[in-house]
Length: 424
Image (tube, rainbow, N blue to C red):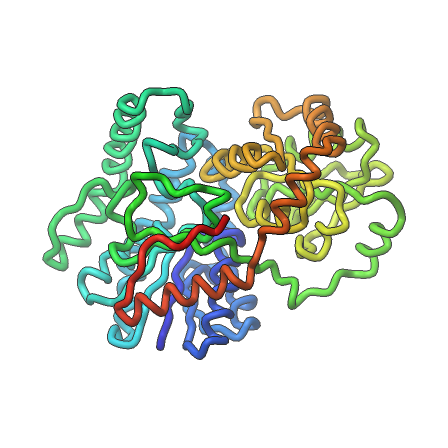
């Protein structure tokens, strides 16, 4: 069977699809990933097929734009520059395959895949890497651009989300419906909150202890658990990295994510907090210009090291709230300090706080002394330590991968099942 995996974004968006693709290939399927040329070498080295949509230059241009992190402008920029222009090219790619022997598995913003499902009747699965992708008036996601306190009455939450849905329709509906009209398909609305998801299967790649099922999630939603892929199978930890770890106490790992080029303030404040608490630190970024020219004693910089290889030997993880980074922190059983900026990051941070394994500070309050105070609590609290150990014990990447592959195969066989058994 041909399985097309479609996703666009940073490493945090693409790496889980590579891990899923490897799992599906091991089960005998022919797997092709459609994504930016930036990830071509990694995907092909993993033994998977690759079709480019978006060049390396496009990828670098988009992540160089500081406005993509703006709660007010970021989503609109990504929709206009990445996802809406991808509608027709993605549809054309799907048309190359035999729809009788193909399943399309895509992230939620791949609108061309949703349209191709209607046109061609190709089996279609939507994959959500984080719970913020599912709207709910009972469990609304925490969003930087649309705060919805839990104490608000349900009718008020419904009004706010309905208004947000209409605003998003104004961004999305003209472009999507123009393509649909060309194929003789009727107009669609409620695009962000309802239409863009597969009517056959929605897979949440997170467990229900991280995000319990909400009463108003689509009935075809199934949670299969966290997946993991961070190149650890293809990368050896350098001697220089290991020497630093052996030279003193477990350090704090600091990373703003692989696509962040504008993290100077994040690094300065995090570095100050580490100095105030007397903690050694490892700063991870490919963009060295974000860091001070001379680093203090006990602070080192590396371009990239797979988190799964170093977090088990770290004291804590300071990061941006990306779901892939959060997953590695949970698996390592260490506390997490988060500065969430936009998209799913505030919601992921809030969930880690509720689990008792982390703390978060918004960007406008992210200063060294405040971080240091929270970091000291995270590192000294017996309850935080207990919760970290408890959640680490619940992580089961192998089972999650197996259940995700099985769910995709069931869609191909026309045997869609809905909500999974409890993963508690």
